[in-house]
Image (cartoon, rainbow, N blue to C red; front, top):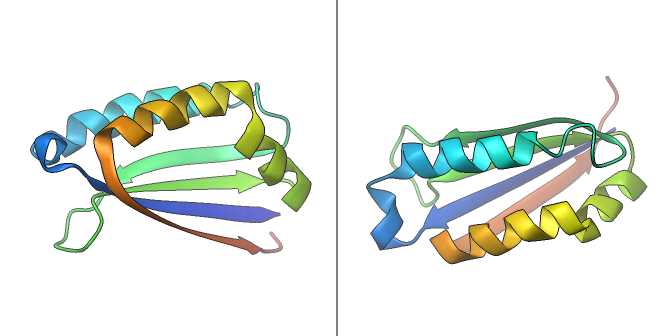
Length: 99
């Protein structure tokens, strides 16, 4: 199993509406369940503490190959385009784990 974690910093123009942005992205990312092979869970949350990043995406995949395929999936790429319009910074971390 693979955990894919992404942290985003919202553009200043979006930061006052972090909850709304998160809700919209959560809905879009959750729509990928059952569409992207090997995607088993996905969530978007808002950082409720001060920090460098405002939002977090956490996704579980059945394998490294499934996570790699997700990165190129057309439906993911559509969401990624939207994400790029509201964020100014991003970092990611991926690791394998056993359940």
